[in-house]
Image (tube, rainbow, N blue to C red):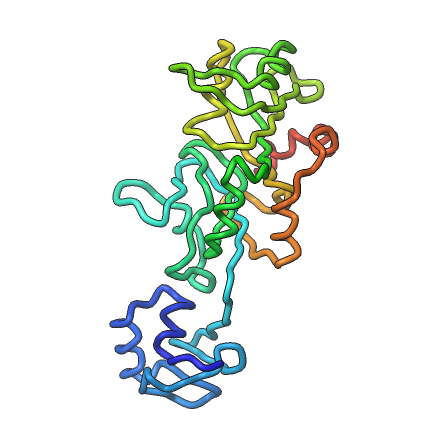
Length: 258
C-alpha cells in the first residue's frame, strides 16, 4: 500500500495543503531520514518513517480517544464563541478528521469519546443499539425512591416528550446524589428528567459508556488514546446493578479527584 506524502501528512495531522507545501519547500519534511521536497512522492504509510517540523508522524487509520471533559467546553469540532473539547488535545494526536462522538452539555463533565470512526459513533449514539451511558448526578433536593419506578416506566419530560426507560438509584450514604443509566441522549435530558419530578441537577458527570469506564486516574481535561480491545468494551451492555455496585463504593472520588 502506497500513498502520496502530502496526502498522508494531511490525513494524519491538522496541517493544510498550503502548510504542507511550505514545510516541504523549507526542507522541514523527512522520509526515512532523507529530506523530501516533493509532496507527490509515494510512501508506505505503515512502514515509512515520516517527520514534519521535527515531529514524527505516527500512522493511525482509526483513532479512539477518551477525554475527561471539564466544565466550560462544548463538544464540537469548532465554535466561534466557545471553547471546544478539541482544544484540549495535544498537537501530537490532533488531526482534521476526528470529532466528538455525541455531546455533553457545556457545564457537564466526564467521559467523551473522540474518534474518526463514523460507523462506531453512529452505533454508540443510536438508541436502537442499546449502548448505555452512566452518570453521577448531584441534586438540589434529596433523592426520592419514587424516581426509580417513574424513570423505569419512561418519564415524560416537558411538552410531553417521552423518554426511554432508564434506571436510577440513590448513591450510598448521600441523599442528594444519584446514579443513572440512559440509552439515549436528548437535549439536556438528565436535567429535564429530574425537573419533571420537581428536582434540579446541580452537577452532572458521565463516568462510563457501555462496558468502558473512564479511568479514575484520568484528571479533568486529560485524555488518553485507547486500543481496539477497549473499543470493543464500548459496545457491551453491562449489568446495571454490577456497574452501580462498582461505582457506589467510591463515587465521591469522581467529585474530589476530578
